[in-house]
Length: 209
Image 1 (tube, helix red, strand yellow):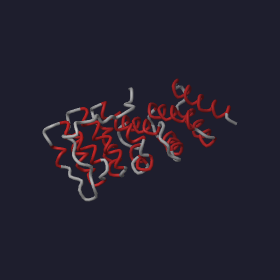
Image 2: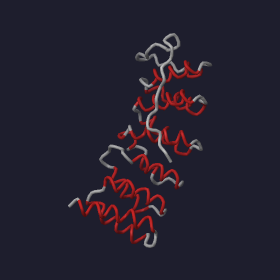
Image 3: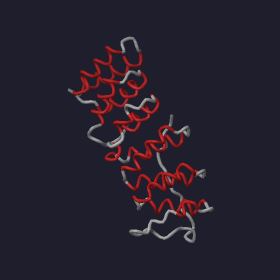
Image 4: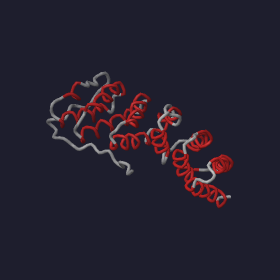
């Protein structure tokens, strides 16, 4: 599925925009304003207020206007908090495809915070959540991406999850991936996509020697 590449916050008339937040003045009341432009502007300001994360997450659940939802997601990312990362991770269970993909895009920009939630996502009972979690690791700038993927392919019983992991490993694998990928190929012998993706990873490793 296509991923949302940018979460834009449209400008609003100055008269509608709340004043920039200052320390101790992160008022979340305007997230419930009747005017969508005011709610959007309020979300933008609250991106500078980590203490506003619970209110932003509640707003994300209730908001129906797409520009406001985009502003709330962008604000959650700007807070840079682990609480925001955990709330965004919960969006992977949403029935709303736009929200799932937009949350993934924001989480990709929070590598340190993602580290606190990714281990749980990669062993989630829901196969689809695990696949989406692998999607977060694609382009995530974190030193443990390969390690997380290797742990996944060693343990996950689902062919689709492992196939998704191989897709990302094809871009990030080092010599440490060779033995785990070979074991995966043996475990899923006869699965065409695993054979294709696994051999692609091994071939790139061989060429990089």
